[in-house]
Length: 282
Image (tube, rainbow, N blue to C red; front, top):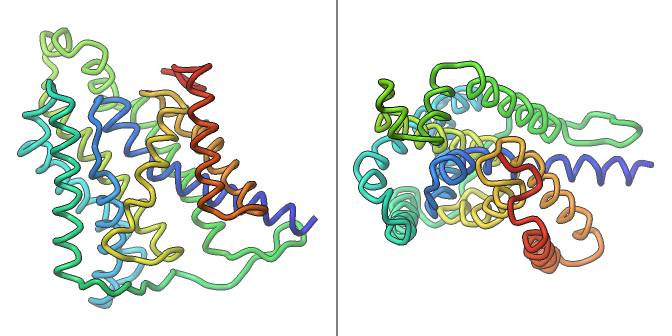
């Protein structure tokens, strides 16, 4: 029973991490149709924001506020300066964001150095869950992921920003004719996706090694999550995260992690062959 509970909680932890990272990608890629290969670097920016805040004497909770704001500002600037000029050129967008990811990695490494950075989690210790002792911070991460997802869903469903972005996605010309500023919507949407990735970086940092290349580890799996779940669907983020995170955790108990990830990739390819629109299409 203890091992089964631990396995389930480990799966929920990985699912939560993937959902947090993929949620921002679902907005940028799924809703805006922009293949952003620099998305992982916004996760890195969030993690290094936590590093900076703690080095300056601030707390983890302060970084939870500062990181999304930083991600939003940097993402908005990148959308205006770079992405906005490439919406009609998807191949150019891929190349531009790939180059941007390399630049951001090098800038971060030049400033902070190549050595792994240490961050302090907000609380330590374990909690008894159905007879199994499980780290309290991992349980917090699961709860935080649920809260963030619900908040984003409410924003898209009940706010004017959510209505505007859904209108622009369905028919940008019609939306503009009705008075919606499409350029502003795209800027804010890209900034929101970057902010969510930076928030994910803060939450992930205490569980991993904070280095300039850490975001690369989450980029490919986040794309799998969005594609498997259904492009343009927030519900699909949950479905895709459950499939990728659940299978990877389960397989990792019997085979090496790299082999498990490869098998999950193979499963994703087969699944897309039979359900090209995803598990929960928009």
